[in-house]
Length: 283
Ligand SMILES: Nc1ncnc2c1ncn2[C@@H]1O[C@H](COP(=O)(O)OP(=O)(O)OP(=O)(O)O)[C@@H](O)[C@H]1O
Ligand SMILES: [Mg+2]
Image (cartoon, rainbow, N blue to C red):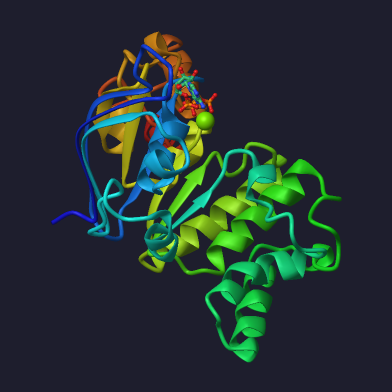
């Protein structure tokens, strides 16, 4: 059985007529890295909430079809059971802050404290995550006195420290600068290499192309494409659904028009594939 299984899932937020997710079928295997792409309002966050139990426990509404996440059926189990298995990093990091802690260090330790983890182990785990997410300089600051990008790193740290079996990231770098995004993507990639199952909603398609095993493209709550980065991002209908194409594909398309791209070579989606195409034509 797949680690995450959604069958014929349709979800309406309370008091809405059109579904935020419609007839969605999805299976994610243990250790897989699935990225979700889609225009604003496509349903990415809604899907992240569904996989992490916030739907139907926090957002009520109407859920039809079936959901199974690490053997848990959210309509039968409480949010507490999800918290042990699934960590959700919210799109808006402000939503992640507990509101009860004075420093970033305490904020990151909060979840472990609730689990009653031994203090020495807790310190070790918090220190390790602070190093990994590069927020040493923030650890004595108030979680409220941070920039959006700094809060986003703290939010990620507070989830990673819990070592969830499934990590759900809703646009985890939306407020980070290019170097910060690169650093955070590297941390996420390391988690994937360690075998964590990752679901990530993300607009930066070049990154997604590089890291994800598969990509799900959503439009108006429906799955329009599911496959490898090449299958999905190479698909010509993506722009019709407001989904950007990789800048490497754009470069190669221009180069093809100018006779500077090998005609038989397919369009690249990653930087490496783009460079290989140019190497071939130079050789
Ligand atoms: N709390 C809510 N109540 C009612 N409708 C909602 C709620 N949250 C989202 N929606 C609607 O559900 C649909 C999907 O929204 P969702 O936030 O999942 O999109 P998204 O793909 O995450 O967009 P973005 O890129 O802007 O983050 C949209 O039509 C949105 O208006
Ligand atoms: Mg969203």
